[in-house]
Length: 138
Image 1 (cartoon, rainbow, N blue to C red):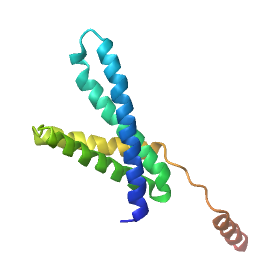
Image 2 (cartoon, rainbow, N blue to C red; image 1 turned 135 degrees about the vertical axis):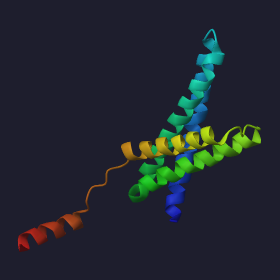
Image 3 (cartoon, rainbow, N blue to C red; image 1 turned 30 degrees about the vertical axis):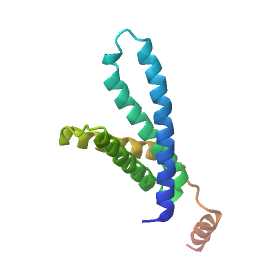
Image 4 (cartoon, one colour; image 1 turned 90 degrees about the horizontal axis):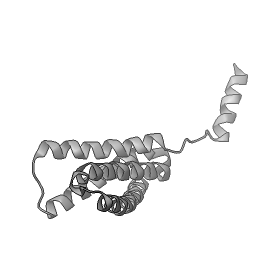
């Protein structure tokens, strides 16, 4: 695996964790102001996880350049592994299928963030000159 791919995926993971922390603070404030915060915990937690995976995948894709989509998928996988480690450390390894669906969703949102917000590379001037040269020959 390319070392630059892992660097961009790790940078995307750092962005995802920063977004996750910021969203947790915002959602905690919103839930604290509501009349029944217990109803909001589950939907907010899934939204926080999805948005942070999306942001991390987008950042990994922008940093990754050519391998941006692979970097965003690796970033989603790293976020899934980190979430699983925290979940197991806190004693919450319940059922296998909902966890597998959750982690597939994390990777999917990271990949979507990478594919929708990736940097569109322009062709280099050298390749454009080659194409013009070839078109003049024929």
